[in-house]
Image (cartoon, rainbow, N blue to C red; front, side):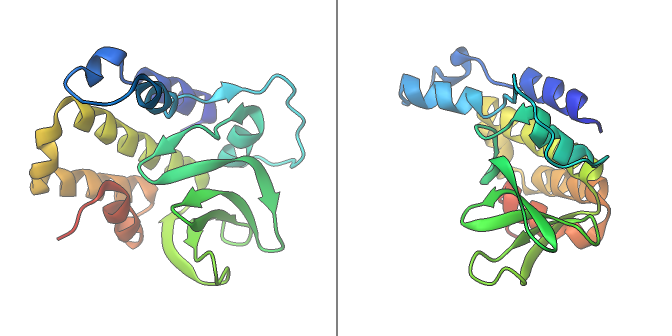
Length: 181
């Protein structure tokens, strides 16, 4: 999936204020949650990293720092290290693009050489899987009972892993979607 399609499809998934009617949440929470589906085009896009990697270009062309998919958040800027680009966080841990393998990984915040989860074989696959996750969370807001259907949730997890590149990535999507077997 390319970055522009990802941004437009993600924005289309954003809930409306009416979707929160039956929940006792503040207007500021609603505004923040709706913003989690929006990437803002950068007005002054200065390409610091010349690349054909779709995810790096996404983060250079769009401000995705308010975007959140589950407990995954993206950085406002790309932080380059010797063997990886830091592109976000999953809770306290670091979301990276490995420069050597081009895989997306989550690394331990205390031991940066330790990979907790492999997330996707490459950036375009990661965008596909993330859009599926965002679709799940958007639907979950409107239909909370789907979270009780473990078969449905597991099928979404398997679909995400397939989009990401295969069985190797399933544990990350189990965590991200809250599937505990």
